Amino acid sequence: MSTTQQSSIPLCDPVACVAAGCDPIVCKGAGVPSNVTLFERSARVIPGGVNSSIRAFKAVGGSPYVVARGSGAHVYDVEGTRYIDLVQSYGAVILGHAHPAITAALREAAVDGTSFGAPTPREMKLAEAISERVPSCERVRFMNSGTEATSTVVRLARGLTGRAKIIIFSGNFHGATDALLAAGGSGVATLGIPGTAGVPPEAVANTIVAPYNVIPDIDETVAAVIVEPVAANMGVVAPVPGFLEGLRRACDKAGALLIFDEVITGFRLGPDGAQGRYSVKPDLTCFGKVIGGGLPIGAVGGRQDIMENLTPLGKVFHAGTLAGNPMATAAGLAALSQLTPDVYRLLETRATRLASLITEATSAAGLPVTTSRVGTLVGIFLGDALGSDCLPINFDEAKRTDEKLFARFFHALLAQGVAMAPGAYEAIFVGLGHDDVVMDDLAERFHRAALAVAL
Ligand SMILES: *Cc1c(COP(=O)(O)O)cnc(C)c1O
Image 1 (cartoon, rainbow, N blue to C red):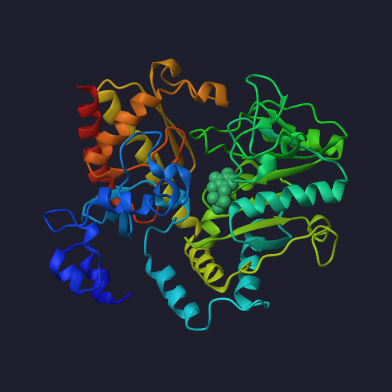
Image 2 (cartoon, rainbow, N blue to C red):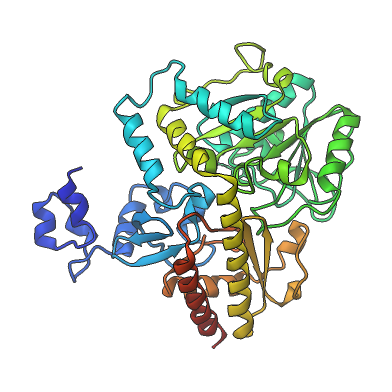
């Protein structure tokens, strides 16, 4: 794509656009490409117009903004509208969009070649960087997404223990791995039922779904317990005191592995993630998001004796054509090198400010909203059913959130130029780009949006 065409997108004039080889179908009458026309065009070739279902706005209604570019805390849609971005690629771009350190690392890596099918120095360095920061990760293996990390870890746990059962928690999310796409009953641990069409009952026959924040019965048939140590896919739900420690003890007693899915929390809650924050050492950890600096990546880390069960040393198969990719590992290294203890303190200050500005704006407007915060992670729950100051501790409670009210608040915010993830159970993310000026701006926009919803 030529630079002419790129720069023509935000200012698309139908005549100039045809001359630049651009398609006038993306332009609305005024000569500006519209989110709606672009999205409709996408939907003619991409099912639902999206490559990850949540992006389609199904949970909130309406048609999504189509992002042309991002910079720091902001994204710009194809119509040229600027939003303060609280999605931050679901937490993957912790430094903010197009951070100079990431851009420079990618430029440097790209000219050396983007993939080889052979070992490379950067994957070694990123593995070292993770291992240095997260003591439980004596060995690290890379793949291309969090989903690949969770599917690998299930195979590894089963292969190593010779057991089939996996315990997961209702409201936790582990990506699009069949065995983990199980839904459970409410309140008690149940055998999983398929969480989506296309997952046969047999694929989840060995998956037990338990309520979050309660230690389930773990017996000698259980290969592993997989948990989000801070749940960040049902809003943000903290582990109650003793939950993670109790899981550790119960797993040890049953000879089952304890696996932390730190795809969101890893390198966001601090250099050693949730496991550092709560001082509980898992046997295996899944990573993704932050460790790729905004490029596709996943990783499994853990004890040497466990990790060496992966091929080629052991018998549990793992492979990936692009695994340990030079571009992704370059971006990941650049991201981790910026994430000093000072940066985490700064991010935590901002997350605290975010939570309090939301509370101030919504209470001034009389909207029933509760925010939850764990370190640098913020979640919001809307509606009267939750009660003020009463934070949910499991999915049944989180589901009391008023999804209709969320949808209205979401659209009011969008109209004020604030982009949140389009779902009532998503975390909201601040990054290095959200400086004091942006936070002040955000406070005003939240106020106006809350007032608009209250009307
Ligand atoms: C995002 C996420 C995943 C899946 O990662 P992908 O890179 O989207 O495949 C897994 N687990 C948790 C906790 C996540 O938040």
